[in-house]
Image (cartoon, rainbow, N blue to C red; front, side, top):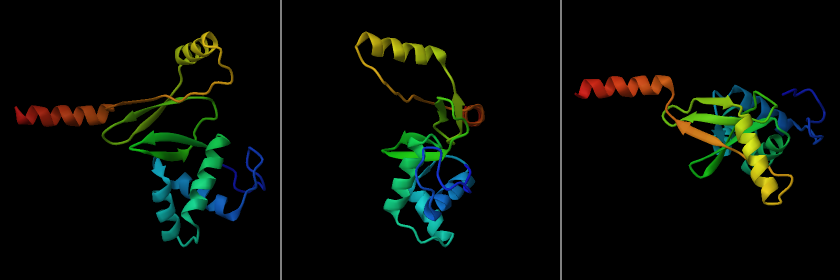
Length: 146
């Protein structure tokens, strides 16, 4: 994200608070909640309200600058690595997230929407499993128990 711009990609005003949020989320190793991000901002010396963090995260997500993942009853955010529409494969154990692209999913969603008379349809798809490292660790642990 280019924090030097007066306006973000979607045309909204680029404030000092938005710049701080953007910079902090860029440092995050993965997805973070608004509450986690707020705590990190406060710890870094920024005086910013939680409602402001939520509002800015939503704006940045709406503009395609952040990925949003719904997990455990809350939205989680991270800096978006790709502006192209994509989905996520998430490890249930360690949280590792991989961006995946699927024309089959896109074609299916478009076909269903058209068949039902819907237009301007959006969708999200998150898949959860165990990454190779967590699977190997679990298999090693299972072998020791035998």
